[in-house]
Length: 114
Length: 111
Image (cartoon, rainbow over all chains, first blue to last red; front, top):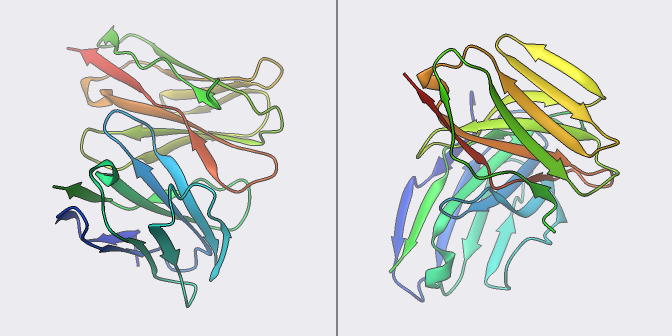
């Protein structure tokens, strides 16, 4: 597609509920990244895929967070048993392969856990 | 020490002035440096990238890199109220493909 598409734009979850956030990257972008952005903070790295391979998941805050990209295109970030501290904007970005390329971000999913 | 540090601001400049935004980073092996603009409630938008020491100009924007001092800056000439946003500095390390972001500097351009 023309840009990185994320859905849903907003999600309200009750504490303890599982949520799934979707990201559809720019066509041809092999690299896909998930970031978490709390209010007033910069984006914090969660995980990185190159095609279907998850090459870095060092930023996932706990084992309640899981990401996949089974066919090297669409990715899903799943959060199990949501907690209030999970409330944030979850940003997906994609880029071409290589060190010199910046990311293109999607519009993000604002998750509020109540 | 955070990996990428920025003054959170707000930085207030009058319309037409030069806005100077600064960023320092800790990883000496860092290879690529980026500036993103983020309007309130929106996602970050890439505005500049720089990879070698010196200045890089694009329209009203100039990025400056000094690897010896581990310092990156962004100058915005002829600042406009529409430039009011948070500016995020991002650094890509030598051994990784991920970007590390600073907390951002809030710029307010006063009409």
